[in-house]
Image (cartoon, rainbow, N blue to C red; front, side, top):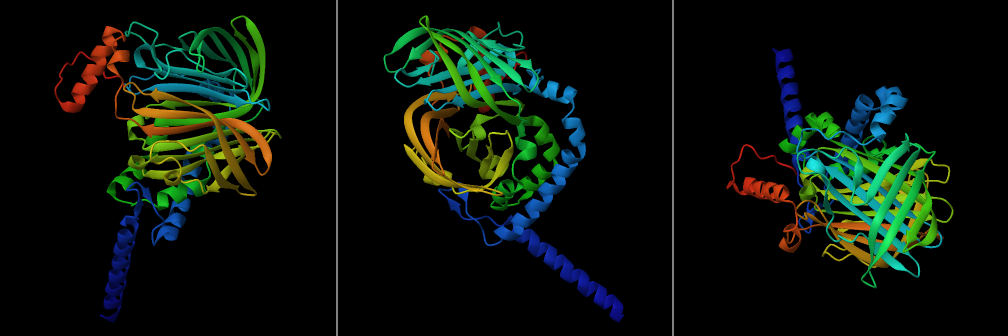
Length: 444
């Protein structure tokens, strides 16, 4: 009888402890501005659990399959334009950013969506000439087909981006017009650039520091929705892929027949999948810095509360040899920089990697605004900046993204093809329950 009583007592204590742990994990932290969670009373306990879970998941999905992820066939498949799936939210995006010691800066991005819809923009900042940008901006939407088929390559609106050598060389070509923002003038432009790299690529799912992910997750309430997401994490990983690669950007630009050679440090990124819903992102800030000693830095902070990442720090430092060192912490907090909707002109913060600390100083030189999404779900401020990191000078670009609810203006959308206007009407009807047409196709 004594043994049975002891067993039941031990079982009762175990159940009580398990219940207490569950209560602890479900605790909500106090929120800053109702969005950003502070470190709660049990933050360090949850942080340790999160680190263990991340180690297990990465071993399961990546490290034990490392050989497969480095085969030529896998890399070639990863690097080429992706086939858009039947999922109406399928997307494929490539972007390039670069800068040099003269202060010349470049940003080009193109996103492929179903039925031939593109979202694209070009920014070129030249000292003495100012900012050049795509003539459609702040709108980014272009149409490359009649809506009955997909665009199978990164081509449209005079822009063509394509790989020449897997994970080594990409070509960026443009022929058309760009706006000279200060003079409100259109210039005839030809652009022929080559991105070259000998470095590996930085996979955000695989290579992002576990400590920054654990920090963000440990601040969240681990409720039923969180555990449901954790059980299906493999499906979420399949739905979103993002990697970056550092290298050089060089080539020629012709402005009204005046030719200029460009040579920059830069990087490209490639994202694809089916989960790129801008309306679920609260905010993000993203820095791309190119220093005079050959070091590149990418630093960001993403707020996506619906995915239990209300404040996720991301990024890395890439040295001149092409070796990536993920950031392990950063004191750049979204709520202290531009929370009211206007990015600051100066930003100072500290970034840590496993071995080094960096004091980053940012100064804005010019800012441009664009809207992203089929219904302008996001408003993006692109800053063209100079910077100093531990006293080393450099240049770069910054993105401040905010949610936008004003919608795409009728003055712009009235020029869209009829099939696209009908599709957008269908989507709005779905959200209100006022539209029913089984023959229509949901796009975004």
